[in-house]
Length: 361
Image (cartoon, one colour):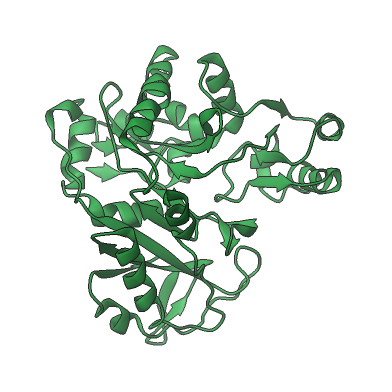
């Protein structure tokens, strides 16, 4: 069995190609993956099925998009329609920023063909959470809630990244709220995909914002989040391959998926300059010392061996993950281990989980 997890192969139809020749593969088809690979498809889908999301308009013409932006109240959100490594969403505080974003995306093509279309939508406020669910197309099983930290800087400042840290479960999300999200977002999403002939099997991940008017969908992902997955894998108590097999065989309802009754977190260590320009090849030290600490797993994201040294080889380099009886305990462990690791230009957020903890209080 093959697990199809990255967004690019999914959007190119790797699942379809395997299925054509009778090979077992876990993941959504190319048609179903459009819920992530095309934000215009996703927004039209949400509108068609009356799913809660921000008010929006879609453009494939730079001039018309710029004219529309000039009529809006700021801030507004501009999104490249296609895949952009988690960086295709730009919050614009002024018309000048919106014009620059539109030019960069649609004219300068900083995200390539992903910028052929853009979505311009209202700016929503509230805490963001990540919802993941295994599904075989008919049955589904929701994960504990998690929360990503998308901005590069403390206090959610600076540009968006692929994710600088996660916590799970989110302390302020009640069982009642989660049941409402299941009823009003997860279940109708899967029902709508089936109704449209785009049956979704694999991992569906709506990113939500909890507004004063209730949870709303910011975007969909058709695979595991990163770095949510690192945190979830510490908590999952059922073999992932057993779950994947059940999804392929349309028998997800026949397997009990168990989660540890603990809290977990991941702190991402990134290269200096990320998410903009950054250098590679910086020697990394201290991983053995970090993993000697209690309950620590160091996940490698952008590393390689060069001249017998472990060196940086990407923007997000390592994920330092910990578990604890409480979120506070997990975070304390992760940050203690983080201080053991060093490389030139290292940067990481020192406030992962703090907003969620203060919100809980």
